Every structure is written in structure tokens, then in C-alpha cells.
Length: 437
Image (cartoon, rainbow, N blue to C red):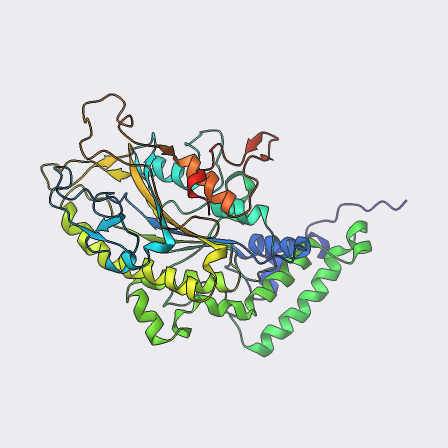
């Protein structure tokens, strides 16, 4: 039996992965190695042959008012003048300003009775994105991280993407940083950190040099020599494959026709929704598109009118785009924020935080269309200790997670192991059966 001693600093074998990437001129892209490793492992494991299932999260950061979006109560005191419009589904109304989405309502369902125990923005965001309340001993993974972890594929570019991220983007949690969302800003700009920093000739020379580095790195590691592979080599090859992939074009919304771009709206959020649809076309598993500005403690009505001008065309165009290309049946779309707004207007003309009954809109793969689940009261008892008693068919955030995961083909009652060996169920919720197709 041959025993290999630990190589000293400065030897070929002691070089770090970061050194390898620098040797190829790929320094400054800290996300690349874990993403590339995850991609390489996914490529090796994916033998299902099934088309990938995806989820698009339209994240309305700050907490949209249910009354001025998906649950209007026209003619009531709590509406405070908000008007409603009819939709393509008889009996379902949306707030005025959502005329384009109203035309697509046959593809969308609403859960109007969602409750949460979190009324703080950061805690509620964590709760809504992970399905769990914050725990000081553990960071839970977001729904996109779960999907990427549980369903590997052969996608060459980042599989979990956050467009226009806020301060609390989707995380990999205890599954590992490699499942964090890859973050980009307005898709009309360049994709960060994935362009070649040197000329093609110089780049090719560095790649050839890197092959020598990899071979020398393997020396002293008998098992890796026998297999002909090193983790450094696998991840580097995956990174290079990613950088050369035609799938990267999906990020570039300028590749879409002018008429398609116009449908989504000339806004960062609209372009984000178009990029999300294009990323689904190449198999990306989860895309979160964030729209800021829903925290309406003052001037609630004017705030929501302005936001509707952005959300309405983008959301409606996303549904049309996916449906026209036969992608909607394998893409689950969810739209909502961390909580709703109070059923009263405060002295500043705003609505405050209200986690006691709000709405999320869902559409696509596995989700029934044209349905309304649950109901809020037009005359809630604002002094009641339990403000959820007046809800019909209430559901908590975990139930929404369980339903989405089920629609994506995830066995959500399965337990995963945290790095310290703690068993954790994927979701504690129950499937909302009425919401299933």
C-alpha cells in the first residue's frame, strides 16, 4: 500500500480551487465554483429523461394590499373607494387596474385566506419564502433551492435565479450556499461575472495551462488519479461549459422581438418577467422576480394604482407567453408578498401590515385554474383577539408551500438531513386539495 504524504505549501498539489480559476483568468466570480459544482453533479445524476418542472415567483416586496389587487370589496367600508372589475371567469373580480390580468384569469387561481403569524418585513419574508418561521438555530432553504436539490437536470447555466433581488433573496439554507439564487439586476444590462476577461487566444492558452495544473493537482491523491477526475477539474469544466453555453442568451431580453418586449412593459420588472419566461424555456428551475414598493403606510391608493401599471402587463404577458409556448403546464407561477394590508385606512391615507388574511395568485403546472380558495370578511371584527376567525377556509404559508411543491412533483413530506445531522421535513404544510388540477 502506498502512503502519500501531505504536500507542502507551494507545491502543485496544494493549490486551491480559487487558484485554479485565477489561472484561467476566472477570478472575481465567487459564485462560479459552487454553482459549477452543483451543475456538474446534477449533470451526472439526471437520468430521468423527463422535462424539467419550473417555478416562477413574482415577489411583491413590502406586502401588497389584498383589497387593491386580488381581493377587492367594492362598495364596502374597508374598500375605501377601491373599485373592482370583472374577469374572464364569471364571479371572480380583481381590483380596477388589472384589466390585462383579468383577461387571463381562466389560467389563474386565488387563495384569498392566507394567514401568517409574522408581521415584520424580514421575518415575514423568511416565512413566506421558506414556509417556516425564523429559527435562530437553522436557516431553511427557499422553495427554489428545494426544487434544485430534489430534481437535478442538465441545465448549463445557474438553475436558481433572483432578478432584481431585495435585501432578503432566496437562500439555499442548510442545503448549502450552492443552492442560493444567482442574482442579477435589470436584464437589459449585462450579466455579471461571466464574460471572458482576456482575448480568446490568451484565454485558450490559460485553459491549456489549467489542464496541466489539474493533472499535477491530482498527484498524491490515489483515488482521484484512479478515477481520472478531480472535483476541481469537474467544477472547472462545468464552469467553462456554462460560460460558453447558448443558454446564456436566455438572460438577454434584447433577443426577444420588440412586440414581445412591449407586452411585458418597458420596466425593470417587466423585463425581469420576460427573462424569467425565457429562462424557463431553457430549463432553469426557479426564477424569482422582485418588484419593490408595496409598503404603503401612506398614500395607499395612489401607490397601488402606480404599481398596477407595472404588475398588470407583466403578469398577464408572462401567463400568455408561457401558455402560447406550451410551457404553462410545467411551470408553476406564484405571485404575492410577505403579508397583506389592514382593512382600514390610517390617518396618512395608507394601510398597515396585516398577516391575518391576504391573497396569493397561482397559475400553471399542477394548479387548477379559475378558482378562488377561501374568503375574507367584508366586515372584519378589528377588535377580535383572533382576527382569522372570520376567514372562510383559512390556510397558512406552509400549506401554500406544500401545494406548490406537490405541483412540482416534490415529495414534500420527506425528511432531509442538515449538516449537523438534524432531520428536517421539507414542508410542514398540507396540500390545498381544491387548488390542484
